Length: 134
Image (cartoon, rainbow, N blue to C red; front, side):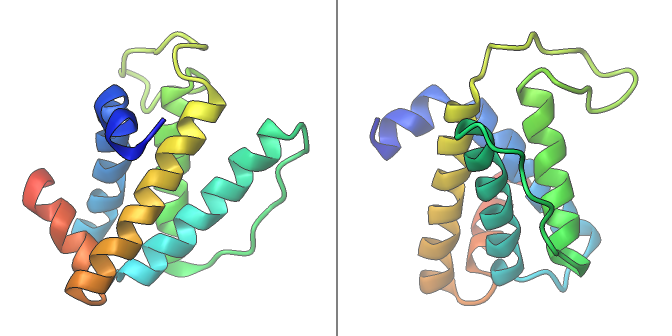
């Protein structure tokens, strides 16, 4: 599946993940794209381990990288139907989104971070998603 097909098919999942990233940025305006990239890399590794049948390794993350990672994982687990976002949030049925599909979404966002950082500098990606999510 190419990027356009992925974006069209999983627009809601991509938007949910990017909203979580942007929520951290709103709370922590010193966040930069590099920290978002590191958080996404750790999330990608986590779900790759799962796809391969391995126990996901604990990643040594700190500060804003950890905060973004936790926000992304919370949304990912919600979209996989594994945990609610909050006590009063509606549940999603497990199996609607596969781990492989989620992994493809995370990889797509990670790629987008690289593209927008090159075009817009150290907060290029965050500025880009802010145009749509603010």
